[in-house]
Length: 362
Image (cartoon, rainbow, N blue to C red; front, side):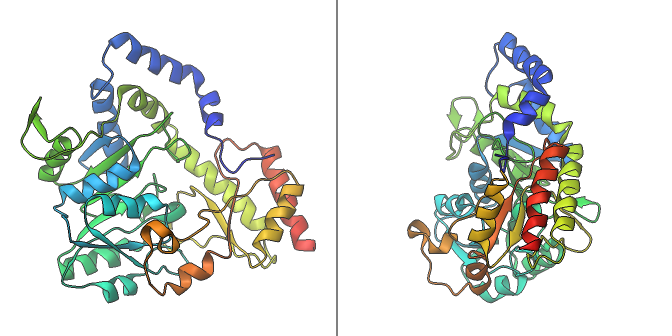
């Protein structure tokens, strides 16, 4: 069965480089916030095109600490989407702020800018747009809106490493940006990991304190902080993988092109890329009113599929919100993810396309 994601495939391809990087950390005797973390932070910031990056324990913490560093506190309202991994809303809740979930664009699946403005109240302090599946949100319009209402913006880039609008990579538009390095991401660690990218030196300083108990001086907490540190082993592995991120994203887009070609005239809606944007193609998600039947059909061809995600966040008990998110709720009955990772071989891609073309004929 061809899986939807396969992080082990990249480990196999890069095993010698990864083993060398890990051995260097083991030999160093430094395992937390050492030179490998500092090296990766500089490399990743340069890749994104931002002055600063701060490694943290995971992508959820990246969103949470970014909001905290920007001054979001208990009782503030933060506007975001229900169409995302639950981590986005969980992170907002962990700051003590109130997540306000709004609808998405039915064509690009990212946050609807008009819905943001309609949801703004005197308590609104921030917006967290999600670059879902690797599709850039409309950041120019979002930043213009944020400036008009004096709101902070934290980009959730957990699925969008390397995505761009024009020549500017996502993660450089907002006041801060959160990245996840979960193993299945376009840039994935061998465990959990995350980073916050920012442009402001004061925000960078706060983030460095926040991730380690509020320390400016070791063991002395000048402010409340948490324990959220990227370790040396993960940083070393990420430095290896970062060298292959752009080429990997190119392979993802090439695979997506083959899928979309195979689905011509099928009645299945393929991903629509925002004009002027570069999609990171973290996931290739189609839309079909016969989703269950399509998944069963592809399984008969040895092709796995997945639901990202089975229920919208506002429909889940932990974060229930009485909101009429019509586009979100409609799409959650229709979306289906196909296999997408750079190491898919030609024979595997051919097999997926064969199943897709066979669906066209049924």
